[in-house]
Amino acid sequence: MLPRTLGSVQDVPRNVNEALAALGQMAAHRAAFDGSPVASAVLPSAPDGQGLAQAQYRNLIEQIPAVTFLASLVGGRNQLYVSPQIESLLGFSQAEWLSDPILWYRQTHPDDRDRVSTLFAESCATGRPFSDVFRVMTRAGDTVWVHAQAHFVRDPNGQLLFLQGVGFDVTEQYRAREAREQLIKEQAARAEADRERNRLRDILNHLPAAVALVNGESHIVEFMNPLAIDLAEPGPDAVGRPVAIAFPDLAAGLTEALESARSSTQAASLRELSVSSPRWAEERIFDIECQRIAFGGTERLLVHVVETTDHVLARREFETAVRLRDEFLSIASHELRTPIAALTGQAELAQRRMQRSTRLQRRQIEQALNSIVRQASKLTQLVTQLLDISRFDNGKLAIQRGPCDLAEMVTAVVERARAISRQHVISVEAPAQLLGDIDGLRIEQVVSNLVDNAIKYSPNGGKILVRVTESLPGWAEISVRDHGMGIPPERRAQIFDRFYQAHDGQRGGLGLGLYISQQIVDLHDGYIEAECPPDGGTRVTVRLPLSADL
Image (cartoon, rainbow, N blue to C red; front, side, top):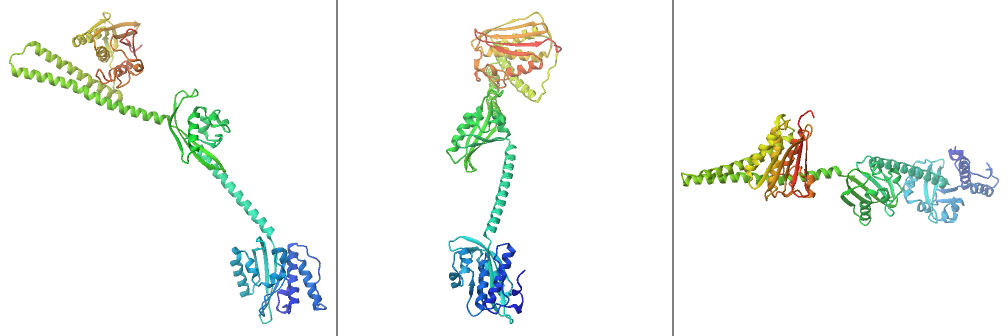
């Protein structure tokens, strides 16, 4: 607790010596409280001489590791005394400090100056002790922390007489506290950075894309999320390896994207990169994006790889479907207009002949009617194919099995074809009878398609052979062989596709005949195939089980 000399009116210092004595007691009390070494000194209660007492007080004060000061608050003079420790603390001599009454204000740190002034003014107004810790600038411009305490001494009438104070250098404690606080802040910042990295890692690990962090110069892989590990070789061990080795299947595309990103401030992208690998059964398609980022003071490249195989294939299928639809609509409109125009033309011709003459030759009527029948049959075939496509798409096309003589049915189809085409020699090789449990109408449709194709793609005429045999017990084989245009080798794999025409529509039709034939044969659990013999032309063969039980 504070010495009694500062607390009661009857002990108010009457002169500078008594004030110094009280100041020495206060400083010694604080120094002892802080554990600072203080030389043993006895303060006389009744000094023999004024000079001896003042010397003793000064001796005590100047041994204390603190700056003590005494200021008179009357008579217009401020500083009466400051201990020599002021020079070791701030670099100013006693004389300099005492000669400048506001030096203490100027040396107070600018950030603390207003607060200290306000607190000191409040103490002067209320008489309460002043106590604060603030920063003070040394002569050299350094900053020290000072814990200052001061008390006001009044006379019995309440008039202010002295200001007694002591200032302790607490720089080490406050720097230690600042260092501790800074350490706490750094630890908190590191913890927050760790949490942020973990959050980022969690986000990257759950992204539906392969993400890797790559060193900008060496292209060394530093981080991979699970999807990137799946693409890498050999998996997680690829971290620490160059990207071209870590991702050998994507090496070319990644290297191009990385170099583009390094030479630009913009992200570098590669779209629809097709990649084949012995590790994958089929070709895969990727989008790659690389972006330069600053991370940890070193240039990094963030690599983002998304597999777009399903999306790209679906888009290509859609584009193909749209193209085929447009082609189909163009071909269909043309193919439908052709027989309609022929029907209309023959009917109008017959009408004009009847108007000009009441007598028409039988041959002329027969020619007109035959042409109308042919075009009507063609129109019927086109409409039937369109209806069959709709039924296939809706799953509504079913076969109705029943007894059918394949030999008789094929012979009837060939007879109709002979009546239509006079320039082809169409022959049949078939047994007298070959019974099967099939949908006769649908198989007749298949045979008609094959014979029509043989005629269509043999524009110069020639021989067409239709054979019916029982190739294996319980299996019928129907083949149609022509010597016409054949099928280009690069198009043979697609001839059973819907709307596909091996000769780009040169011979008319919708490109549906073989597709529908294959669907019908599949419903019978049979097989259909096409081959091109070495001597030219085409042979299409259908194999059917003669019974549904086979």
